Image 1 (tube, one colour):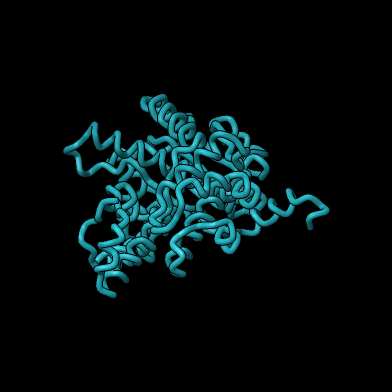
Image 2 (image 1 turned 60 degrees about the vertical axis):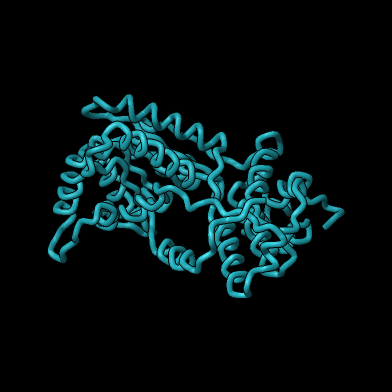
Length: 348
């Protein structure tokens, strides 16, 4: 084990500052793209025993913060989304109309947001490498569709990411023109729209939001990528408006992982990130079947399960994760239902 850099309470201030940043702002997106904090290593036992109580508290808080961070694992879904997205961006580069797009759709907790934000990260880093001196570029724009959204609300989300002031007298046309102007000048090449399932074409507002997104896609020379829960089962791809989306967008489905080599690799990767003093390596790998049964193969639930058990291990002083510790972490309702469905009737 190697000793980490000197411990400082400053990381707590950084964590609080980070919590106030959202991907739906340029500042939050820039922070997302920044280099991760220096890796924290476990202290040797002899060094640990020499820490003052204040330093030990800082050290434990740093480890808690480490486990609270969501680790991005390059799953097959992430790799496929990035590959398809990069291909579309290149194919759309010289298109003047009817640009193709991408829809990432599936159940909750299957990694849709991670997939599209990793595509955004990949595109922006490539763009920065190609134009290292052009600080005025905004290669990626990321928004989420608010619940019960109106067209003006969605247009305002575009403006909010760009940092454009929204004056009381501005109508939706004023906002759209301002957004299109900035995106065109800043060479925005990728627009990510998350939470698309918040749009319903059965309502007037929903239909107007769909039309507004279509209008943005026609005016902004960029590739549009949508993500949402079970989009193919909603009304977003039906009717005249839905047919226009279905005819231009490729759909990438996300799903729970089957129990197999990739699932085992996910568990192993997550276990390697643990910073616990008494955890026996290989414990989680040996429990990969149990973890699959308990989470229903959902990557989001798996991450929450392991990180939650690690936090408990530090707070309780056990410094290790066991099957009992994993069982003590409550999971989301969907994962609980999945576990119940797989439990033999006689065992209930």
